[in-house]
Amino acid sequence: MSIATIQNLVVRYGNFTALNGLTCEIPEGCTGLLGPNGAGKTTLLKTILGFVKPTSGTATVLGYDIATAGKSIRQKVGLMPEQDCHIPGTTAVQFVAYAGELAGMPAGQAIRRAHEVLDYCGLGEARYRNVETYSTGMKQRIKLAQALVHGPKLLLLDEPTNGLDPAGREEMLELVRSVSHGKGLSVIVSSHLLPDIERVCDRVIVVMQGQLRASGTIKDLKKIEGQPIDIELRDTSPAFVTALQNLGAIVLPPKRTIYRIQLPGLPEEVAKIAMKTARETGAQIRGFVVAERSLEDAFLEAISAK
Amino acid sequence: MASPIADLTYRNYDGPLEPPINRWWAIAKLSMKLSMKKKGFWVWASFSTFWYAILLIIFYVNETLVTSAGPVGQKASIFNTISWKDQFLNAFNESQLFLFILALLMGAGTIANDNRAKALLVYLSKPCTKLDYVIGKWLGIFVPMTLVTAAPTVIFYFYCLMSYRSYGFWSQDPWLILKLCGMILLPGICYSSISLAISSMFQQGRLAGGVFAGLYFITYFITAAMNGAYVSITMNNNEAPSIVKNLFYCSVDGIQNAMAKILLHTNGSTQIPIPGQGGQAKFQVPEPSTLVFVPAFFLICGLSVLIAWSQIRAVEVVR
Image (cartoon, rainbow over all chains, first blue to last red; front, side, top):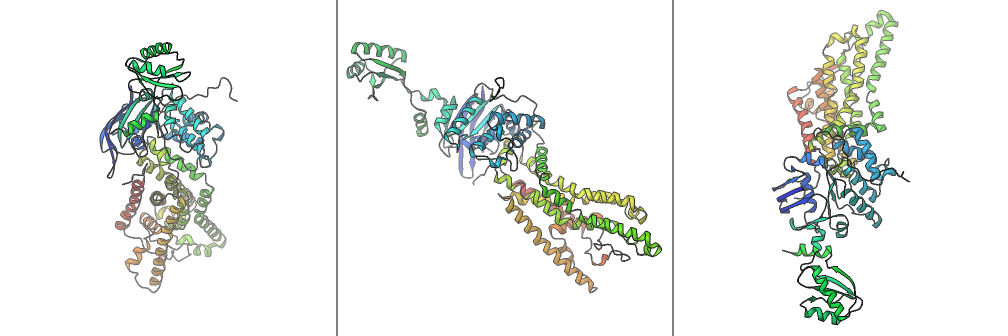
């Protein structure tokens, strides 16, 4: 089941077209929204929330039409914006409880839930401090807490690791990963940091110049056409390479002792052939894995495609 | 260290959620709570009642003189010539500066500080509309301001009703309480609208406060100058031109004075009741035209709210 369906969405800021006929379907689970700066990721999130009115096209989020049911959508969605934001003059617990009340929680429930969410986000000790005195890492956490307080069905995270040191980044990714898996909560993470996306998301959507460039599971995107396999030998073996080439295989130059070979057929069949050839040529196989490219390569290919 | 049975993993909220309408009340509640937490609010609110305190002292002293001096004292009593509604008008006018300071305290930063902290992203990502936000912020200033104006006025009214009925407090104007109910709404309506508009145009509460104070005092200077001109003209037994009378009311302070005079239907009288003088109404700028000033008041307030509404955006849209 999809949490958002977007069809031919066009968003213009004056003469600048931020989203140019974007069409995509976002399934349940944790989805990464990838794209270079200015690709339209944040605009898409803002359009989903009703901050920006689309020039044309339609979109539904959690079954609600963005054109007519903005309030219902926002009640079921939590946003962690990219910029630091807080309610001035409030402590963390007041801020988060207030965010809950704004979302429609009764005051008593909001304050109880605020304590719970702050504990979860690791701000339990600092809950009575004024938010303005928080460090960057704490401000990121409080933004996550205010987005989670009302129990949203969909969480939108815009650059959640922005400005965090390596330890803070690690902790934030762990928090995001834990809320997005097995808690009945779908998450869309917008980022241009590929390792972050790879760490927490199952699927990605690649956006470039306001258009969809690629989408699917990370595993699928990393797949290489023809499904080559990487074989690690104990030592380099020209005889093994020659034997495989005689069988019609394409063998790429080795990286240390790892050969990437491509033969028609399933990876299991190719593996059998490689094992047999190794036995015949006296090569010792140390490892065998279906080759895949990095997410970065997949991303670069997607954004460079016309 | 957490107890082994403590579940610290994320759990979804499955409690009740109210329908996504009328979120303005939550915004108004927090604005009021934050305002009333400031010590300055209580200090300036107390100062705004000072004229009622002075009147009570004057009345007490006068009443004591009346009883101790017998018929001579009774003849000199201010209660023989007092205009009761003018006492409320004077107290209202005298409290204006303190109410302005209160408005500055509560209103100058109300949207400007939210702009600085990018709080609109929080508000508008929840089921709140721009209208909810403006209404909530407006009420957050209006309600405390009205309570500050209402409390001393109502207490003074009932004190006078119980103590001075025999001096014509009731008979002079039986509908006075209703008129006062209208009057006590004026500072709340005026200050919350204007401060909201100014605050929405800035990213810093201090800057907004500076502009608001500038507007108040520059226009107040016009009122003071016109008052001086009016008094000097009438002292020479001449009729003041209408431009002087109208300009007198062309300030943040003045327009509220105009509305109060229209509501109470009076020209006003001197600040301190003078025995036997009937309140020296001659030197008071007379009640202005209802047809001009009532629409002007509501137009200014309405436009101010509209400005605030138009300035509010969750995101900067570059065109």
